[in-house]
Image (cartoon, rainbow, N blue to C red; front, side):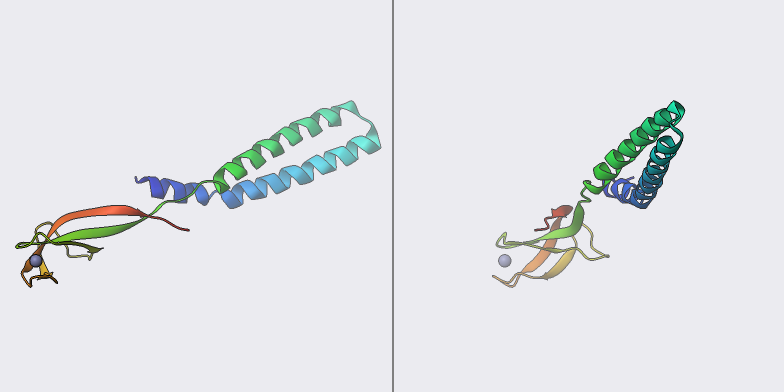
Length: 124
Ligand SMILES: [Zn+2]
C-alpha cells in the first residue's frame, strides 16, 4: 500500500475523532454539573477520566488534521535520437520505456521515452 493511500485512510478517521471528542466534552460537562449538584467525589474522578479522554481525542484529531497528503503526477522524459534534446511531459496511459513518440522540436528527428517516473506536486 502506498503512503498516500495510508494518509487518505487516516484522513477518513477525522469525523470519527471529532464525534468522539464532541461526545467526550458533553459527557465531561454533564459530569461536572452532576458533581456540582450532588457533591459526590466519585463524579469528580469520572470527570477527570472523561477530561483525559477528551484531551486524548483532541490530540489525535490535531495530529490527523496536520497530516499532509502528498500529491504525485506521472511524467515521462522524451529524448531525441539525434541531438539529445530532452523534454519532460505528463505521462499517458499507454506509455512505456523506449516508446517512439513525436518528433524533436529542434531537429525533427524521432524522439523516444527514456524515463518514466512520478514526481511530487508542490502546492503553494
Ligand atoms: Zn533533435
